[in-house]
Length: 143
Image (cartoon, rainbow, N blue to C red; front, top):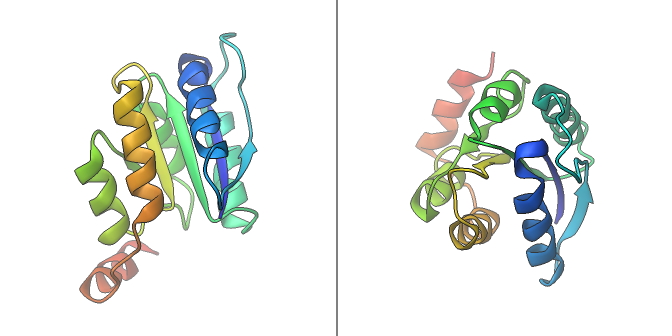
C-alpha cells in the first residue's frame, strides 16, 4: 500500500517516528512530503500537497500531522474526495475506516503520545470500509 505522509513543524518528530515504524513493516511504500525540521511552515500547503496525492491516485491513503491535528483536519477536508479523520485512540481510528472510509488519518503530535499514535496508525491501516449503509451516508456527503 502506498501511503503519503506530511506534517508541519509541530509534528516533524512524530512523523519521523511513524515513518520509521512503517518502514519496519512489510507491504507499505512511504512517500514523505515533508517537513523534516522544526522550522515554522504553513500547514495548509502540506495538507494540499498530500490531498492531491490521494485525489490523483498516487497513493491510497495519507497521514497528516500538526500540533493538535485541528488545522490539518480543517485544511484536508476542504478537498473533494478527501475524508480526513482526526483520531485520538484506536477506536476512533477503527470507526473512521469501517464507517467513514477515511482516506486521510490526522494526528496531533502535541496531543497524542508516541505509543498511542503508532497504535492508531496500525489499526487505521489494517481496517477496511464496511460499505452498506455507510456508503449511502458517504454518498450524501459527496457533492
